[in-house]
Length: 113
Image 1: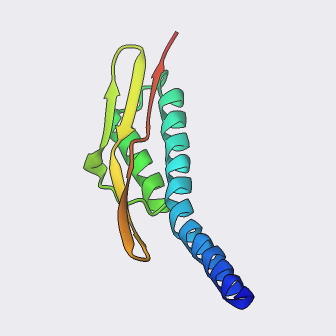
Image 2: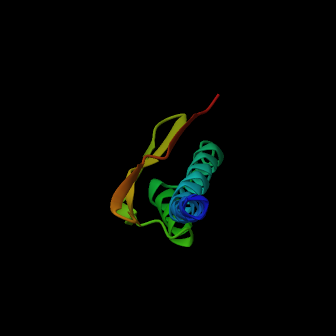
């Protein structure tokens, strides 16, 4: 009986580590993309950088992070004193017996003084 509990305990720990191995990278990549979006909005509130150039910068960062988005998915809106950037995407994760799609919505809006 004790050996069965030990085997089940080890199996549970291995399963938890496997799930963490599959789930943490998409969340970490989203965090890094969100940080890049916030910095791009903050820095370019006061520069003449075009919306298309900002979109390309964010797209290159997303490619570096292996985030499955197209350049058209990135929305950039510049008005007089503000820059807003947002993107919606999903990442498919195959867990044992439970495939799921993680939905992410990183965004940032920065207003000038």
